[in-house]
Image (cartoon, rainbow, N blue to C red; front, side, top):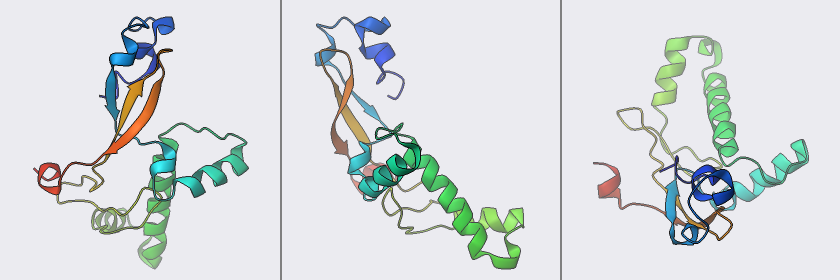
Length: 143
């Protein structure tokens, strides 16, 4: 899970697993390599231009999309854009939204329809490196 796919767990220098064992470890995280998202390349370029940083935290793209979704929802409501109930109803009614993360929406429980995870291997220095995207079959993701 997310808690073990960090240098604190995987890196010997950080008190994690010994360096001879680290390359045997694979772990999953809810984030992918930023370049793997449909809008990842554009996000990275815009982020670097704005902040002068070419390697943002992997969760930065989620923060960007969360704010964009909120602002787009409020704007779409026009005069109801200051009505908390209307905003929440509109947010949870989101379906097939095109975004930097890909197309998504929310299910009847309010969970995102994004289901992909990143599989990471650990290098000999104890650093997690993106290996590939894991996407479960729709039947597994829904129940």
